[in-house]
Image (cartoon, rainbow, N blue to C red):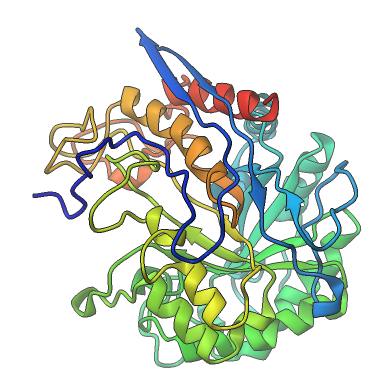
Length: 425
């Protein structure tokens, strides 16, 4: 039995009514059509939408994130919301050759995305000592993005071994820092260095609510302290800095795995006043094999945004942040793992999907994101598989729009077509 049984009325029906949170949807029409013929996929999406009022400078925080070449931000109050699009690369761009880096940027432009989410790991810049700075590793990524008129959203995260908390025995770079002030100084220098090149949007850590990315075990108090040290330091270097909460992994609370649910963790941050440090919430709602637009009895990770009784939007309202936007900085589906791949929403007992279903999910993600007023930007994860398909290859290596050898999956064309259709609505 699936943990998310699909409502029998229609799994593909768009949710057009007002959610329980009271924010009325302004989705006038939503149509997703995916036609697969061999490896060719065409996706057509027609959408319009409206969002909640933006935060204003009177709140002490920027009204909207900067985008290169974009029009002036809308004034506070009711406004039409244009959904933004991005591509999430993780820690890959820094290690590409110049040719690979250029191709990645060109592919991003072809897809129609404007933002690239990429790790800026503290360990990569100061791997061996506090006196060492290898900024040149990231400079070339910033310069390439600038040359292709793309905006970077660096994820400031991860700790050199010399700076790791004493209670973290792991050799992983995802140990929290021993000294938040030292991490904040690294973040301040990054903001100062790259503001002149148009980098103003930053994410502070990644998935702090699960042990794989916070090795001492998720701790809202400890992460809130990191935010409280880091956000003011960055804004002191760049008053235009637009800061995202560390992307929340969409999980249930599972003590044996040291997972804390995205909703519990967000509520804890709200209770501690930490949400006042950031401009937007970052969230990772993977739903495969279900489409993001599926309506279920128990609620999918997408429905957790604003359709479940306890949702991200309802939590933000509870802690006086009703207009805080939500950025989907990761979502997608892998096309390789063990066992049989899912080829439909009804598939059970699998943990990956066929290339055809990945393409359908990619197109539907545009429609589903546009239908949620609080969602401001949607990033697909990932650009390219990092391993060839093999019996021992890990699922996490196969979320790409491209195979490891550079061939495009059907999802590349599907996502490109859906973004283009949305923007030409």
